[in-house]
Image (tube, rainbow, N blue to C red; front, top):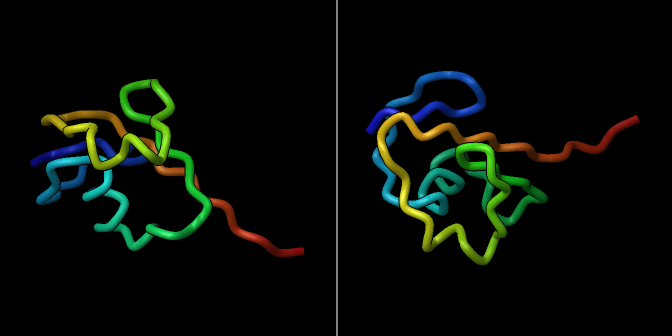
Length: 65
């Protein structure tokens, strides 16, 4: 299914937001997910189904100095 991830069209085999997070290897990391302009709580990731051309922003935090 084609999704818009961080502004770029991506073809992913995903059914839920959780699948998208796992695809990018971001599970277990501090992460904020926005789907079609709405922040999605981590507890909801397995329950929110993705649909074609859904806009998803994945924002993860990186430490450094």
